[in-house]
Image (tube, rainbow, N blue to C red; front, side):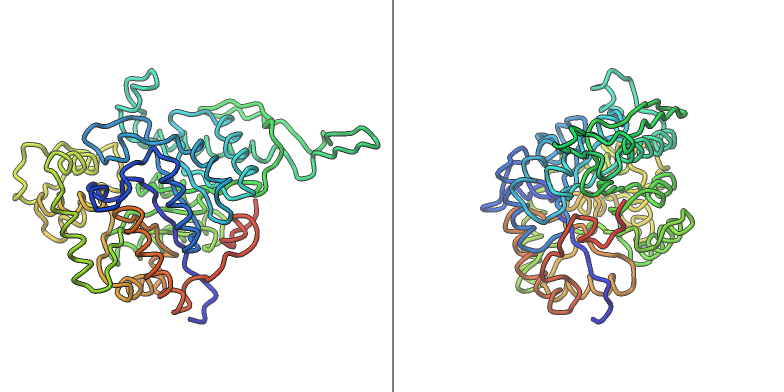
Length: 430
């Protein structure tokens, strides 16, 4: 492949595996609240020259949800530890705008950017479960579009705080006694609709200036935020045509916001199950699916659709549910797929139990590389967020088998570039 454009890969790190039963595989890790497990994933990702190690988060505990959602490390604390145990890979973590303050978020990510040498990304979420609000002295979340309205102002304030310091503000001149050039530090004095923040930040400008912004909202409000501020977009996708439409639409929206198409990297989430033969890969998937429990799967389907399906016949067609306030990107993608394919609730149940609503790609390294190459060349994606079904072997299979095949085809780098995460990804410095 002669095009200079290169594929990007990220790993969605869930210590019990992205499949709800992945932790039951022989030799699989079974802890998400373990630095040792997360370090093992990060080291494997660096061996595969991955661009991003990604830690999701939630502000609540759910008894019947995915195992990694029941006990998990707070992302920024974990990424701080991982930053000194890794060298090149980008480190992305989730912080909700619904339960945080811009000053704290700006300061924390700037600190991590300094510690890591410029390798940090903030995954901006608004949160979608009212149960989480109960942990923050609230009865419920704001409605969907208002959450995104607040998030847009929140992100602007965080970026504004990062800009309250110019480069070279700390002089530290022993001969004159001048430590700070205060002409290069300014107050923010933001007084907006929802937020009021004076500034400046009390930490100097970080290596990237602005740590990267990750966004995953698939609703119109989420896409507007992505088009305006996101560097990486994590997409929920099942259908090639829908993926192409999303890709072209979001890139066009970015241009209308005064940006370049290449300023945003779109990474669909995909669970890859790799075998040396198609039969071996299928056997792995069948084994994982055999462990899915009805309680777990029903909870996952209800959470993704935003509707309680307990009590409905699993062999009946998927109802044309209306979208709710929860996870509209997931709901829209799954409901469109179900109606298009005339799926039953049991079909959807099996799909969501496997990858929580994400795309499942099962087969040999050559087959997976064929699909990735088609999506990349046809500009349905700039790369992929890999959701290994279990760790560490399920991830090592991808790194040891699929990555070399992508490299052989000239689609993927063989070595890391120098510099910060922005520089490695070829994104403009902020």
